[in-house]
Amino acid sequence: MAQRIEDYGIIGDTHTAALVGRDGSIDWLCLPRFDSQACFAKLLGGDNNGYWRLAPAGPVRATRRRYRGDSLVLETELDTDDGTVRLVDCMPVREQYPEVTRLVEGVRGRVQMRMDLAIRFDYGRVRPWVRRIDGRLTATAGPEAVSLWTPVHTRGEDFTTVADFSIGEGQRVPFVFNSYPSNQPPPRPSDAHYVVEETEQYWQAWSDACEYEGGWGDVVGRSLLTLKALTYAPTGGIVAAATTSLPEQLGGIRNWDYRYCWLRDATLTLDSLMVAGYQEEAESWRDWLLRAVAGDPADLQIMYGPAGERRLSEYEVDWLDGYEGASPVRIGNAAADQYQLDVYGEVMDALYLARERDIDPVPAAWDLQLKLMEFLESGWREPDDGIWEMRGPRRHFTHSKVMAWVAMDRAVKSSERFRVPGPVDKWRALRQEIHDEVCAKGWNADVGAFTQYYGGHELDASVLMMPLVGFLPATDPRVTGTIDAVSNQLVVDGLVLRYQADSASHVDGLTGGEGAFLPCSFWLAENLALSGREDEGRALFERLLGLSNDLGLLAEEYDTKARRQVGNFPQAFSHMSLVSAAQCLSGVHSRDSTRAK
Image (tube, rainbow, N blue to C red; front, side, top):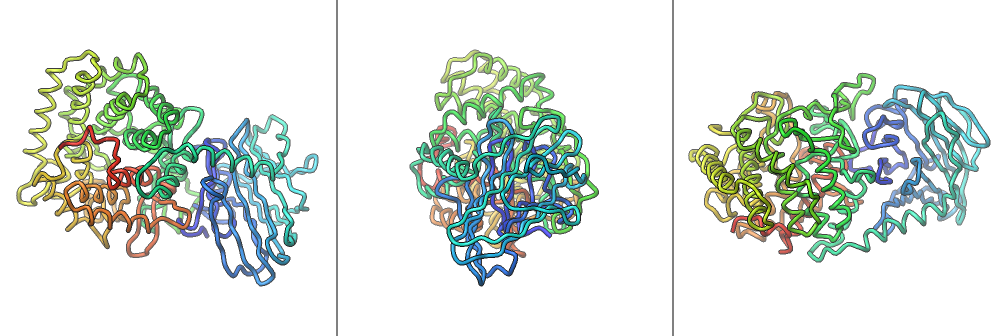
């Protein structure tokens, strides 16, 4: 059985990532990319679906773990009655093929150790052909192959490779795991000790370049490192999470594949990177964005693959039981085919922000933006599936219309500030028309708040974006009324629900509920601060920081009853929202020019 979501740490090589548990087990790893098939899928099944555990053979009395400095080199110390061992895990920045390096170090006494390696390709379904070649263990199935090198003697037991060894104080035992195409020879094993030091230096140098000057610097720095870890280096795309199908409710059915790049994250990503001085990463994300959205504006998707792939067909994996029985396990994401109006605003906002922050514009970028705006002139009037990827009937969602306003607003400001050509008078008129309509139809005087969709009574935390994107000031009575309504009706144990999912099957087309949504909780903290309730905003922010695990990592949601993180992990959206809230509460928010005063 997998561990609690918060019991995992992440290591990665900016192509893919592995989840390492407190017990020394790697329970999730997709090779060679984030969205490739997993060779370790215990996270969503059991031991027979693949894992790699290095741990003491006897009982563990205490566990401590940390990242080495500001890096992605993970250290886990395990105490036993006989002594203490340290497990060092990392994935070196890739030169050709993926590699996982593990180093067992003796800290105190002499400890008996056990290794269990169960390789299962195709999300835990395929048992490979295992051989020993030139002193290395190799496992092959179709086009995929992996190898393991270690000086420790290994043997096979019940379709699992195992090893028993002991380690004393001052000793170090390396394990090097490589992935490569099966029609090629296995790569030469690297020096594990050198790899660990080189990997630590790489990440530390990246962290040292951070220019963030606001409060909570250590927390923000770890969130930025997490965003970097979720970056697909060849293209600059940033995936939403390293996992699929971690449930939004324990035992529930709201299990989605998040190993793709969402356009909704575009502005927050750019903002987070640029405020910290990571210009190169911000420019790479901007370029990914332009390549991904190129084409017919009517075909704009809400998400794409790490390299900009459009076809993300969704299917269910019936041989995996799901995390703690939460099924189905889904691969791919059918929401890629939805119509979400808000993405046009997010793209226009991100590209405006990039220009504002002096990222050199791509010559053809504005031509693409003009095409997007041309579509939006009529497209904004249509109902859509909403920011939360509703699988019920399309509606006129308030947040979607607000983001259509954002698109018009940024088009006008781009023309005014950067002297780019366009029908500015038409955009100004449409901007005002959308604003008037949202204020008339999205506002419900009986509820005293902006509601989820036109004519409805249900609340939705997405309307908290209004002051954050400049639609209305946070001090506007309608916004303060909305803040109060959300606080009274969507807050559970101090944390914010996206909407009342357990009673919204007529809207989202799903059954069951979900946890409190962490990005929305960060948005509320910003709203409170901007509306003059800074102490409350700061208190909520501090509460949210307390939900991070011991490594500073956040999932998508939090189950207030079970007191556990839920949803895919680690979640880029949560960490972006953390950075944004820290900026806001520190008074260094780089998006002040877009806010309504």
